[in-house]
Image (cartoon, rainbow, N blue to C red; front, side, top):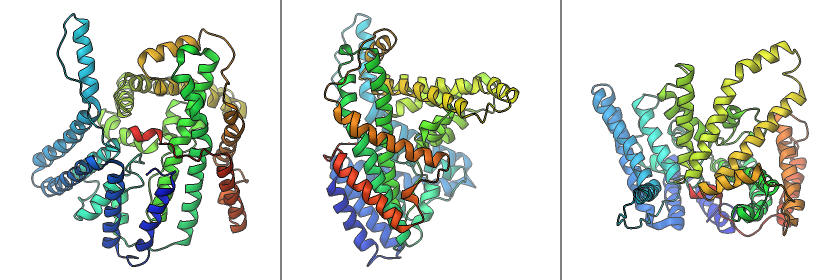
Length: 482
């Protein structure tokens, strides 16, 4: 039941009807209904792992209560309980996501040393959304321990927060201290929320169906057969995959945020026009914001952040980004992806002082459109290389792709790609134009116009464009696998 399928919106209407009629304004009953429907939604996708979700919610709920009760009088006990919660979350992630990878790598190493271990193949089913709800749970017990929020005394509200169906599959990763207070208030039907929610859903469908799903056949054809393609083709596929990944994930986030708004709940923003970033650090302030801010608050800052020597802060950045890469999955390609982006962030810090010195000497350089555009293009190109690392099927494919990127010259692969380079790229142009208007406060933004007529016409036109040019068959979202 994906957000770009008809069955999801049938389900969503069923959720909304009692939510705003017989349950209107009754917070506890609305939360119970959200919990029941969220568990049904999760069971629809993966009923075998429903018990794991319920068990995780129950354990961390009682851990939070115990931590708060011990925090003042028994700090060592509270700390022990908090550490137990974090370790439990890490162990769950390790067992379900990384154990098979770890065993396979150890087996390969032992075989390389000339031994033949008899190790059974591990096929552990990875629960959908485990990276998202586990991060929610770990941040909750840490925040309670640090006194940033009280523990939740309402088990239904806590379970509804963790299992909230619009975000459980692919985020955003909402913080308990921001989301739980919203569940304490009854929600009422609001016309403005409905208007903005519908616009968000349609825009998300546009990004997913008209861009990501249109580009997907081309990137699959190239990255699944890298040996058959040349450097220019790999470069084009890397750029297109970066756009595809953004349109796919941002499209989901837009729909999740919009669904939350329709339910009267504010979901965290996840993207802020990352293709206008001027360096690696700026890119991660704009890309997957809920994950990057989580890693900043619970990994980078506890490691020492930038409140230490310059080289130690660079080390902290690299550790954080290696973990960011590993968060995406058990594959060396994700580790390389994390290292690559860690290096980009470190370089942005290394060159910050000389760049600012140059800008101060050349008075108008900082405000120059050409200068800013050049920085944006360099950042985009560097992130496109990172997209190649992310999409590659194996580490050997990364090496092959790099060797072709900088060596083999030839015509760009184009067979069977007419829809991509017509309707697909027209949609990309529409996306960039819209984001350009937002980034630089342009006046032509019909979907956010103060005029109801203009908004309605723009929304209707976008729906027609989706029906005419979009990939109408439901395609799973890239980040469902994480």
